[in-house]
Length: 384
Ligand SMILES: C[S@@+](CC[C@H](N)C(=O)[O-])C[C@H]1O[C@@H](n2cnc3c(N)ncnc32)[C@H](O)[C@@H]1O
Ligand code: SF4
Image (cartoon, rainbow, N blue to C red):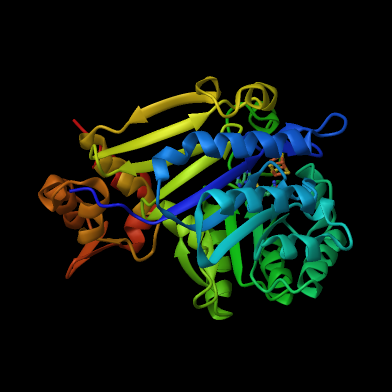
């Protein structure tokens, strides 16, 4: 029996100052003034359209992702949050995150984001090495990054995430470790540490830059940085996420626990449990900002609606839950997929026999080996 999990709200803001050569997110270089006010109107219309999927439910977290949400003026974020909280109940202490590019930090803005209700910022730092930043095509240098984080802290933000990437062109192990040390100096609550991947249809995939560390080199960086992070009190709780005690990202945790989320904005994806019809629905919106702007709030803005067949739910669930260091409980598996645990008895036993998963009481945890080969583990749960 499917039961309704916590609900989050994802809001996609699709523009950036410049497109980074490694990035395959739905982000578009801003050419000329951006239509902030019409876009907020479109977001609210989009939310109205999706509301019947979430009647009566409480929002536990909001995440403004991009793109570069910090390009949006605080008045626009404020108007959206006011409109959203008039349509949906926000839980007390609801985590509200805004992704921020240090190259867009302006004096005085952070206070206003806070006043609008944003209580967590996620900074796209990537590296504190100016050579690395240049090779990544970033619009900021390391001094801008330090300054932006300090501005946010001065404005009263104490729940900050810093995004770092490793295995960068011409990066050595010592450089990757220095990036972690520089991040520590800013005392963030949370650090995301992503291995640079060459995504199809990006400039880097077409023309890979020289000096990308090989698999062994990347693995070394991951292990050393993970040890440094643990030593300073940042516990890894997901493949790329590290947090001080009690400061995990609630929004992302909800994704990884196969929770529900409304996805509004150009190209945004949502996932909703429909208790009445015992279905799991995925819904996504058109990616292109102009097309989205012209159609938001109507059927024409939908990229698609898909009901996930019960047989596919275990795979989807594992794709998320096995990213977590603590794995998942069998009770959550049953509640969120609507299937009995017998549905995964065979692949669970296979994974346990290979040393990939461990079962203790009701909890299934990936082993070190399992976390290294997540794709192989998850593939065991594909429907026949
Ligand atoms: C949508 S971006 C949000 C932040 C903001 N747009 C910025 O870049 O400053 C989310 C994060 O994903 C990571 N990321 C993007 N492309 C990546 C890639 N190809 N490989 C690894 N990490 C990537 C970066 O760390 C980035 O900060
Ligand atoms: S700023 Fe962020 S979202 Fe925009 S292109 Fe660069 S990595 Fe992608």
